[in-house]
Length: 95
Image 1 (cartoon, rainbow, N blue to C red):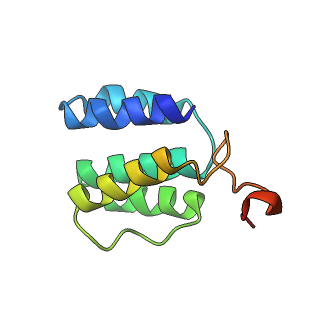
Image 2: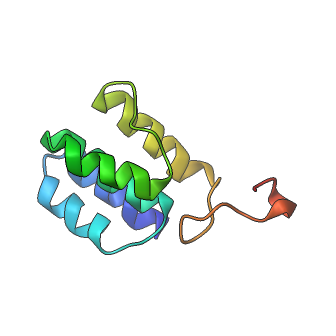
């Protein structure tokens, strides 16, 4: 799933918002919800973005969309989260 979410970010950066959104809609989990929030923020739909931030368990991102996209990509590539966007168990330092 993580690779597909990264592909969604790539699509967004290539100007394919709809393609990125289709990928985000197909997955559950905190990372997918954050991606979904980011996509709606990029589109200018702040109300829907806030709903997705809530589903992601996050406050709305304070920086601009470029900074947020970087932070999201960093999280996806860091391996901090498990396969379905849940925090890993205590043995890997998660909660």
